[in-house]
Image (cartoon, rainbow, N blue to C red; front, side, top):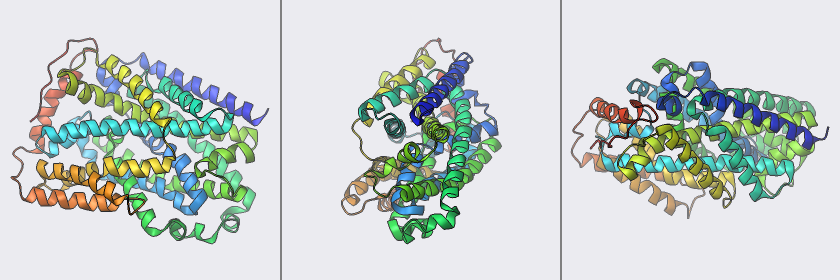
Length: 489
């Protein structure tokens, strides 16, 4: 069997299996909370499987290995940043599970008196962030599909978007988490086989070191990419899980607060350890072919040109599994945000059928993200430019809101305005503006907060108000009557 045929067979089996799981879980969605937050009953082993799979998506698999192809161990910065942010989120924010939040915006509202300006900015920004991350996952799937089939790149984007939509939409979060567990298992077996084969071919790490430039093996590739760039990349990626609604959604869906905490901590450690696989893969691709025009194609090229057919098929399915896990998580968060925040913002009421509204929102999300993917270039470049503009400010106000009691909504608003402005200006001078934007946001929030009156309500008071407001979605069956939206002000 040829490599292309083996890969095609593997992908067909994978898509059929994951789609079957999604439709199986679709039949078990009895109420909106089943679709939107998996009934808040997920055990630790399921949480670890879905969190790890969500972390190791397109950015890590394609972008990280491409970075390792060009700069050696620098490719590890991608999963290290995401793993570190996931670990810190578990340590510092898992207790939020006790409040039964549905979205990260509800948590943000509790930090800042439920101020409408902060809440609605968070709602819109976090919803759009999931659409952009979904774009990244679709781009990654398209890159793999293009390398495997040789089809037109734009057609590959459309096919990748359609395939991920079929898997993600039917069963909601309840289906997403179980398909993610399956995909994570496939992911680790696939990369395990790949690393074993690669190191065997070059004579272990010592042999690999002899086949790449010396600066590739410097600490995190700093001699090749530069310490400042590595620090900024880890910082922006560590901030992402802290301000990521998908990660929070998974944590809120845990069976217990303890389960939420340790699933995040363990997952963060696993993802950081996985960074070694990304670094080795990228450098091995460089050893095999030093003249690839696009670094993001390092892993797809390696699969198609250097691996036996059975291993190529397994690795491609593993790559697609990781990307689909991330896409599933982004899609689930986007659907929940739409029902809980975006629909009420536009119509002033909750949808009559929350589950149906969420599914239609995901149809739009995949159409939008696929269209955006048709006009986007490098995956790493997209992430590095997009994240500072949107997530740095949210990361600042979430961290200060959590740990500094004097933080006010006026200070948070100042940080949300300053960080994207500084990011845009800093982009003219630095390739990664995360650090200056974050520092500017912290200073703006601290300065304005000290000049404005303290908060009027406690975190618990706003959380109780959020619980009453959330009952409009959680308390009614999927086909129940709409309720007028209650604004927490």
